[in-house]
Image 1 (cartoon, rainbow, N blue to C red):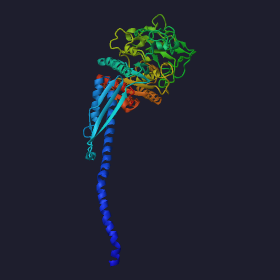
Image 2 (cartoon, one colour):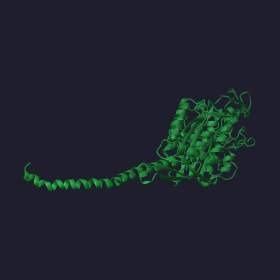
Image 3 (cartoon, rainbow, N blue to C red):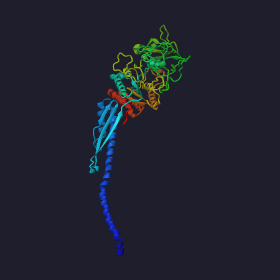
Image 4 (cartoon, rainbow, N blue to C red):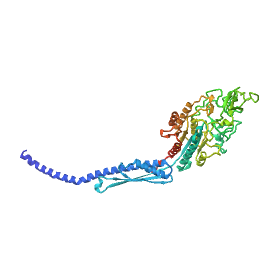
Length: 527
């Protein structure tokens, strides 16, 4: 490099040396501030993460505790256990046992944690404390639920019916205990077996004999038949058969002495739809959907015979229990009309065989009245839940839908599209659907083309129809003798897989009913 160029660059070289020193000094002075700011941001980010995790753990624990029990000590312990499981020690942040305060139906949970800083410790800030709290309001608001309860003969095993009543009492009490306003909880009971017992409601009266629904009737009680509370009577105990879709005539004439089972429309014998001359009678789809509003005919267990046949030709049927027969001579129980009806003696259960002892209870907010229907010891009561009859779960389910429907025959329910009310059905069975070989809700077995497969399919169709209407469905299979096909129908019937329960033991049945009642208690976070 020549001398002239060197002389020209000297001032710049001197400036570079001077400014390099100044920048180094400035960086040395600013480095703690820059590093500290970045470190502080990182520490506060971790502290925020600790708070978010703390809040989530407290929310989850509070919800789990509130749904676990109605006992304060059990709730508190469940919250603490759930919190510890959701915020284990290996997570960032040191937590402390949450504080649980329970006042009435409100559960308040608060907690705090701290985060040990790394960068801020340089500035003397060694930890950051964070807090979180939540309030759970345990309540039910606007809920209509039908408990569809298996009362069939198999429920006599090990007093399973007693366990069912105990589970039902627990369900009722939990629902009302968790309600801010008991008027917002309405529960119906639908005991079923071969059929259901609508009782005096069907003739416009309450079970106590008071006027119901302005006296409107939805059951045709024929002349010569009276309502009775004696299950062994030859009168009507309150059960009904499903209505056949076609052929009904309001002007049809009742065949005398046939207990409401034979009706003539002129010369035709199918005046109320059921045709004794056919072997393919079927009430579909009135036995599935909600749209049919009545009337129904009375349930009277027995059999239809043709002209010149005799009641005494069949086991359990007697000369004195045949309608429209000859009155004297050796053929005095020979049918002398186109068709006659035979019924068994009282000692063989009479016309109410397969009819549940317990009455349907329409939607009610009267806790005491509901509990009376499932009392543990009601030996003196004529309408107690007792094991009797075969299993027709599809019939129980369709009447469960009818009691929560706003349309007749029962009209206590709110409309389907009322957003302030949630409708639910809890459906339980202890066995597979079984066809009675003589008579059921589907009239005489020899006169219809029903089968267990059809019962199952119609059960499933009813479930789908109710779910489309927005009904929340819980299903329970109880006992260990239920086959996989039945369990499949009940699992598909439920609103979700989590709302189907298999309860093989009595203890499990009680636990499941308690769990369902708590899930229906409509928990929400209010803070």
